Image (cartoon, rainbow, N blue to C red; front, side):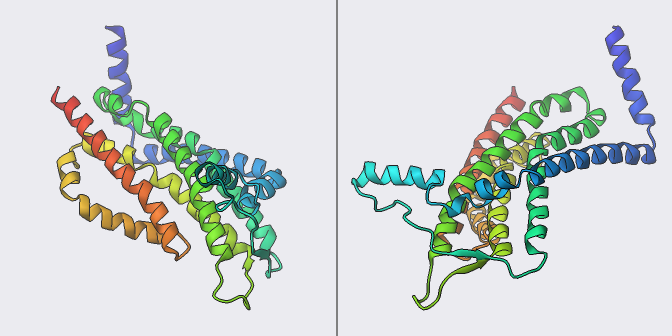
Length: 277
C-alpha cells in the first residue's frame, strides 16, 4: 500500500513538471551523454596506435583477421590459396596540411560515440521513463541491453565482414595497369567509418519494429504484405549507406538488412501473440 502511494506521489510530481523543467531535465541527460562521448573520444585519441594501426588500417594488412579466416576457408574448400589475400595494392596519402590531425580528431569522436552508445541509450531511457506507466515500462524492459547488443553486432559485421571485402575490392580495382591506386586518407577513413557505423545503426531495426508493433502503428501482416516493397527500400538504403559504388558492397549490405527485416516480422508476430494473451 505504501509502495503504491509512493508511486502515485512520484507520478504526480512528474505531471507537475513544467515545460522548462523537462527542458532542464533533457539538458542534464544530454550533458551527461556528451561527457561520456568526450571521455571515450579522449581515451581513443591518446591510443593512436590502437585506433589507427590496429583498427582503422587493419583491413589494409594481409594478416587481418577476416582475410585469415577467408584463407583458411579457401584451403578447406578448395585446397588452394585462391581466396587468400596476398597483397593490398594501394597506398594512402595525405594532401592536406591539417588532414592527419583532423582525421585523428574525427575518428576519436566516432570511437567515443561507439564506446558511449550503451550509456547514451541509458540516459535516454532515464529521461523518458518517468513519463511512462507500468505497462509501457514493461514493454521497454531490456531496451538498453538488447539495443546495445544489436548495435555492437552491427559494428562487428560492418568492420569484420563488409569493410574488408569492400576495401580489398575497391583498393585493388584498376581500369588499367597504367593507373596506380593512391587513396586519399580522408576518403579511406570516411569509407571505413561510414560502412561500420551505418551497419551498427541499421541493426537497430528489430528494436524499432518491436516498439512500433507495441503501440499499434505496425503489424506483422502489414510487413509481410509489403515485403517486396521493403526489399526495394533496403536496396536503395544499401546503395546510400555504402560509400563505394560497387554492386558487391551494396549486396553485402542489403543481405543482412533483409535478414533483419524478416527477423522483425518474426518479432512482430511474437509481440502480437502476447498482446492477444
